Amino acid sequence: MATNVERAAEQRKVKLEEMARQIKVGTLRVRKMTVAERELNPPVPRKERRRAR
Image (cartoon, helix red, strand yellow):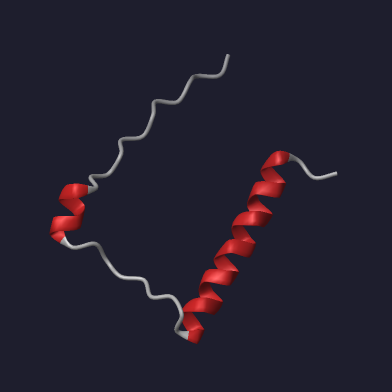
């Protein structure tokens, strides 16, 4: 049985493969955000990680 991390990694791999296929076919296009879009959607700061004991 796969762990949660392994399942998440597999799902991410499948999703990236599907995105690559769509880009190749031309049904999906990836572009950089414009300055106006960046102002409306600023990057979210990362949460601080809890330290392991």
